[in-house]
Image 1 (tube, one colour):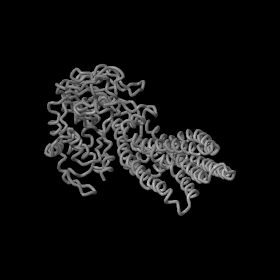
Image 2: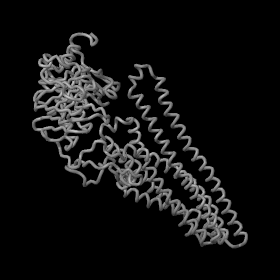
Image 3: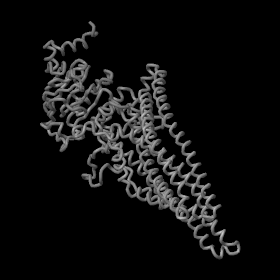
Image 4: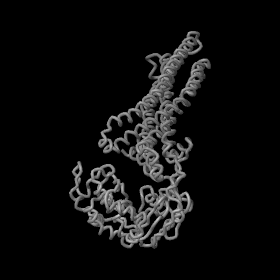
Length: 622
């Protein structure tokens, strides 16, 4: 098993992008995405497996040369039988016969073994996994808008399909090249060395075969790309339905989802049918061409033999050689079709992989250093590309350790301000400072590491409770995880959890996006995660919206401990949750309209007082 393991270990399937030298203290330095040109994209990955592809090239040449010898051996055997009688054959030609047998029994199987070891043990698992890993590496580092503009299922499909498609197209290309070059050239030279006229059918066949490929292959490539796009779109639709299955069930919309998926399936079926039409037409034309080659070569060889111009051994070699060329041409044509189908898949996958970062760190970005936690918004303007902006000249100073609540009608810009602070989007004008450092000039990873966030829409990972809480600090101990859960009033319900595989407590898995937990339970796990992270800046975006009043009251003390010593920005429509903030800032039409303590704003009788009266004094319509 040693040869198998050696080839299986030839590639590191999780090698970081870039060269090994592009690492700092063992951490891979972020590298550019693969080139957007097709050849550049292929070379970006193929160069990382140069040794394996070179070995495949050599093994492919050896197999092609040995296959070329088979019809020549047949002709040689017929010639030996013709020249030597039965009583003299082994004495005079035994060594030659044994040598040919040794080549076929030992040499060819060994060459095929080497080819399979390189392909099946080295390239198939290693290169495929490497492409998938590095593609995922680039995609996961895209900005939030990248994922908001596409189906998650389609992106995932592209990442998963890119590896096998790129691998197969390269492997098939190497094998096809050797069979065309070695076998075709060898056949022409072998037959022409006996009588140049025997090469004419093969040369004519090659010219027609090349014309056929030139006409069919580009169309096959384009239709394969279209079919691949339709397949990814269908995957995206199916995953979208499954991800939102609760909404589908609540609104009883199974038939609408059927129509949504059926439309994508019909498009795929139509595009795939257009692609397979070319495959069928190519098969018909090629089989006709191959039959003409076989009949032409046989007819010419027999005619030359009947005139006494070539020996029978040449006829015996020419016929299987023409037959093998016909068979190989079908194999090559099938592989060429597969090559361009896979190229189409790769081209489609490049739409998600070979994409410049949507929110890259600027050149020379440095890590954010938080010493005090002061936050400053200076004349910030942002409107998601719309002329009527959400924030317009927004100014706000948050002192170190201050707890500020953002209040306002829906659409006033509260959550937008938080998204800009986290650098999910870049301001259209103005800047945001943390301890005097412009966040546009620091690394996004260091910025987000300094901010703990609890959002309204809490989606957990489909992993264990422990893994979800520890996401805040991966090196946390079991005791620290449990302590965070207790502080978030989550330990008791976690202890009673179990999943369908019998895992319980902190080992229980929560389902996709945490669907097995109630909204309040998800929120408490999220709060535990941020408690464990213990970042110097805290953002609470409707952090207790999913909790009932009793549970909210129970964890208020924990939230107070969580906020102690931190700079806090909190957003909530339930104003009672913000009443104990140091300062409330009321946003209206993208600007600060009022600010002050809860009592001071009530005394002003402005926007905040109206909002408070509606929530505490009755129905909105009263």
